[in-house]
Amino acid sequence: MIKDNLAWPICWKKSSKPHNFCPGCGHPIILKNLGYVIDELGIQNNTLFGIDIGCSLLAWNFFNVDTIQTHHGRTIPVVTGAKRAKRDAVAIAYLGDGGAYAIGMQHLISARIRNENITVIIVNNANYGMTGGQEAPTTISGQITATTQHGADEYFLQGPELLFNASKTPAYIARGCVDNPIQLKGFIKKAIDFQMQEKGFSFVEILSFCPTNWKTDAKNTLDFMKKLKEFYPVKEFTNIN
Amino acid sequence: MKELLTGNEVVVRAALDAGARAFFGYPITPTTEIMSGWDSAYETNPEKLIFLQTEDEMSAGFATIGAILTGTKAFTATAGPGNILMQDAFSMAEAMQLPIVAIIGQRGGPSTASVIYSQQEVILTSFGGNGEGYRIVYSPSSIKELYDYTIKSFNTAWHYMIPTFVLTDGYTLKTRTNVELKKPTKLEISKPIVLKSLKRNNRQESNYVNLRNTYSVEEECFDNNKALIEKWNKIKKEIEEHEVFSYDKSVKDTLIMAHGIVASSVKQALSDTKKKSVKLFRPITLNPFPVDALKKELKGIKQIIVTESAENQLLKLVKENLYGLNIPIKTYNKPALGITPEEIIDVIKNNK
Image 1: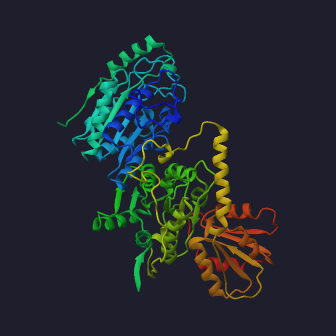
Image 2: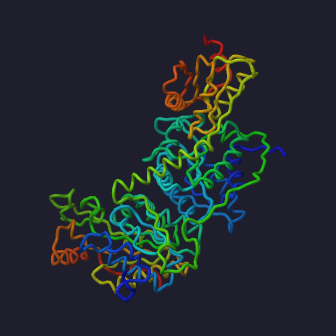
């Protein structure tokens, strides 16, 4: 039995640890910081944590927080329906870049345009991890993936930038990175706090490691992350004060 | 008191009378007026009711599920291509045994075709998606029944915790007729599946639900399948419904199988012709299929006639359920066309 201490959040579900993510994966860093935010905001009992298909689904039993793992790309509608039915709930949708920017893009952009009072957290690791590292909407120019064996084309999707420009309605939108957990935790906290103040749509994209599919060692993982940041600047894209 | 109402208006009334609070949908003929009717109800009572016109049918289905998880009686309505898209959400509801209710206005296929007469979504609605069809499908025959079975769908869905469908068509939904609606006396209660309490001991793991539709190993998935099969086998006899209709009680040698609005035509034809040797067997639940009741009615029957506004939907169910019985089956099937009492009379007259 693990004892509580500052090394892990109170809302961690200890019986589900060790977690099922690959060694070196960024998801556990993100989830740990989300857990701290849930603790700090005191929302463990009124949060509905929605989880997509892909690597994100491995978080289905990560927390002692009510969790619904749904179909690919459909997490945003599920938490939207829940939030509209129960306004005092905190609704969080947790998806990968494929679920959010490819198969579920219509839900993501519609949630932004309708200003759904939910928080969406997207994990951007620039590929489809669970299925073996195929090209994602976020795969960067020249990146080698299972389906871009000679290097990806020059097109890639900047989610926060797109969402920020999709509507003039104030929203909290940010891009963080797992290599700076303190800043990342701040972004997640601001996003959920925005929802709790009933201000509307909040969104954090998080650049995350995928050494398994990047086929990188520790040094090359950090180097590739540096490169990713050139395509995806870490910042808050906010039109709120 | 009799009122002049369309089928779509009756569905909205039924949902409200059944205690529904939320509707999520995407416009599609012939069920659009369920959405606009719900919107009107929502406008008069925005504190209590919830309405969202979503970006597509996947969103409508999954948002309905989201609301249901919190303990809200929620429903949706769709048709044709929308029914296909919504199978994504219905599959999840089937696998997780969530009590979603959906009104399906069948459309003629292939592609986006006729919106008035069709019974071509029997198989899709009963067995669509990646599941085995653990769902209830009611096929009402009139606007009065549309009201009763919409209410019943909410009760069945929430009593058994199972996806439940009202399978109908544009003719029934858009016809305006005099109808007397009897409010239900008993309603099932909807309880939250998630967020059951704000006051939970946060150190106790069992106080939290981690719902999933994913399995680590095949055997785990098999266990879930077994649980679904056992539940289905346990409840289906309680849910099965059918109707037998004939002009009188004399001995019959011919049984006509029809459901929904086509069954109404058959009833009319049997009444008009006073045909004594023929009876109608109408499955009210297409799924579960009332197979025992049908076999009982087949004693002395020398011939079955299947008639439907489809080519091989009800027929497929009849053949599957009567496998091994050696009774000849004739058909009078018209995919995506209506079938009038006069046509049924001709079928009976010409039947040797």
